Length: 218
Image (tube, rainbow, N blue to C red; front, side, top):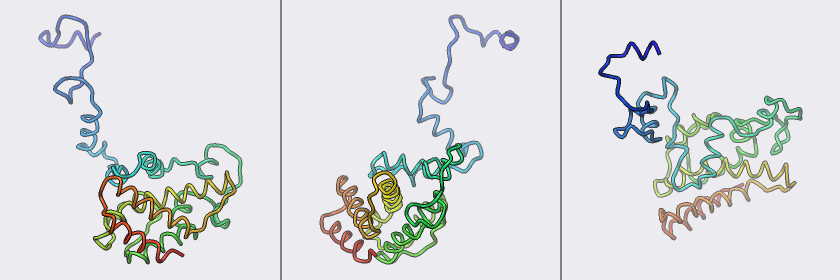
């Protein structure tokens, strides 16, 4: 009340008080203006979230949401469950040799590495593969690749991480195993279908992508 009484008289209007949103001319809140303000101010000094690397229009929204959770380290890997107080053994169901974590299951596990290396060999990709989702997504966009398949290559992280997670859950909850080659085939065909739905790839290029992508799967 003291703050209100100290305001200049010209600032005080008649009628009921109401909330206004100063970032919109209509004075009505909008997510767009809020997000634009966050980006403009560099998220209060924090490192900006690479939304363009995570939210890709041709990728199903549930997989983009999954990538968003992986980026923030919020998926239910065994190490995260233990941090929440659950008592359980921590071992990777894919390699059965190391503890399960986001960096291990997606980038360091021999099972995951065999999938990444198959695509690296098949498409002659060059560059580092840092075991951090944020650094990985940024580094992935900097890889050299055949420009004919550039639209396909940029979707590989989403597809690979998604199918590795599905395989992990199938082994835990359904006791069903798939080989890296089987998963690689699913990844290649899924990416092709994502692009064909949006007419981003021709039938001829789709078949060439599938042939090239599956030729070196091990």
